[in-house]
Image 1 (cartoon, rainbow, N blue to C red):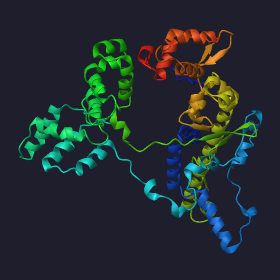
Image 2 (cartoon, helix red, strand yellow):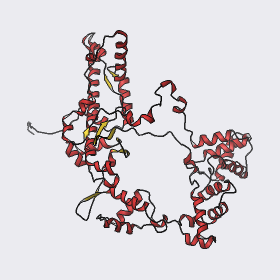
Image 3 (tube, rainbow, N blue to C red):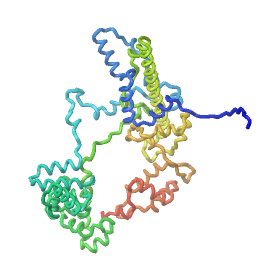
Image 4 (cartoon, helix red, strand yellow):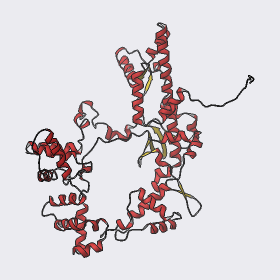
Amino acid sequence: MKASLQLKVNQQLSMTPQLQQAIRLLQLSTLDLQQEIQQALDSNPLLELEEEFEQAETDASNLDDVITPDDKSNDQLTDEQLADSDWHEEIPVELATDSSWDDIYQSSTTPATGHADEFDFDAHNSHEPSLQEHLEWQLNVSRLSDIDQFIGASIIDAVDERGYLSQTLSEITQGINGNLIQQEQDVIEEYETQAVLTLIQQFDPIGVAAQDLRECLLIQLKYSPTDTPWREGAIAIVDKYLDLLGSHDYSTLRRRSGYKETELVHIVELITQLQPEPGVSIASSQADYVIPDVMVQKIDKVWKVSLNPNCAPKIRINQQYANFGGSGNASDKSYIKNHLQEARWFIKSLESRNETLLKVSARICEIQQKFLEHGEEEMKPLVLAEVAEHVEMHESTISRVTTQKYMHTPRGIFELKYFFSSHVATASGGECSSTAIRAIIKKFIALESTRKPLSDSKLTDMLESQGINVARRTIAKYRESMNIPPSNERKRLN
């Protein structure tokens, strides 16, 4: 073998730590971003909250009167600088950064008086009880023996979040006896479990701890006031003909029950007022709140897009610590230098995230202005590639920036991905978005006769009359995506 020297040219894409950090921050939700910022503040002494810095300046100005507006630092990228960037001038949708988020939420996020000492801390910190905690509280205030308290606790443990028993009465009794045997106590009979279960089923919410839907509804009817109109008829229908009622087979229901149609109208109305899942009326967990990343509002007949200034804390470099990098020993200088560079990268990544989010949101609003004006029926078809081409970014970047990011509009709060939808060709050669078609279908069904609901075929014909050609199976798919039952299940007596 002979030794030889070969030269090869190879292209390889490598991501710098700064780019990796920027991409990671871009795909974080607002809540995750807040946690990321807090972790950065805790780990890097060169970073500090801007509010704390401004407060220190204000305090010094009040005490010594030595700081003037001209003395303020300019090393941060302000909202005005973001709004005045080059890309902002290319789009007709105006980007406004001078609007206050409090203008929209002033009545819901701050006390009416504005005094901190009047804030209701009890209401703010109140704990939303789970269904089990709610039932256990009622069990504890009931006058029961120790063994019945133990039985009741075992029954409540078997109640799921809907309010139904997840175990049979026999299984619950066996589980109780297993614990009693371990504690060398006398076992119980199933009828004793049934007695305590009957008591718990009268707890709030009424009908809880039922074994099936029939029992749940019957419990609610049984413990309703005896003078409730059509109560006895409702009990009879639920007890014997719940399957016919569920399938909306009213003709068979009339024939078998012996009730006239006018009577069934009142009976069914009473039954539909019952709660089929009593557990949902009790909070099972703390509510999850959506924090909008972007605000959209119409000012002087112009739609303006701006970042929510309250969605994440503002940070800056601590200049006092940064100045230590020019003095001290080599170890201190290296420590300050490394953390100062990390701080600058982090702030730059945050600014890049904000700028990208603002660009994409502005383009979305420019395309979907008719939606902002008139609603879902005017939603235009939109794909990631269209926005990516306009803002000169990759589709993967647009996908990241529209995931778990929310926009507050006069029509509600929507995830940015909501504004993207596939298109359907119209008879005139144009396009209609799937979101708009869903809205039209929903409107047609809302206006239909409950005695003769619109079938999917009829909905297809009605859309075709408006120039929208959609297959019947597509109509069915859209209807199911909106949790709208088929026509036979939407039929009503009145």
